[in-house]
Length: 170
Image (tube, rainbow, N blue to C red):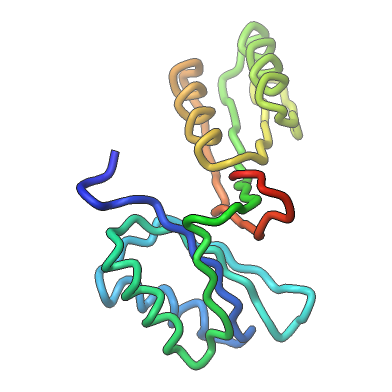
């Protein structure tokens, strides 16, 4: 799937909750031509601190450089490499199925049941599904929905993660 030595990497950052921090961190990636797959940010239990979850694809050497450069930023409090540790990680995905016939609606409900999704909105010719699962499972859902329905709209949030208490994987 990825080139030689390249693999999906995950970093979690604790950062100061200040204007411009998100821009500075995303700018570090674009300025160095690092690939930024996903970036999700939200405040923590401490309103002065935000937590970012970043997904990137890189080789070992580039990834070490990314971590070093993030650690150098004044606003970064802590960098956690999620790549090889047990993490609970989920992503939210919304899929709106448009031009939906009654038969398609039945299929949507079956897909929702199979993937433990919620039907969160329903109209005469549309259906809105919400999935909260791993990015890999969401990739599979999007592929299935594109193959099964002629008109869909997809919105994804980036993954968020936290270190696992037990030894469970993503």
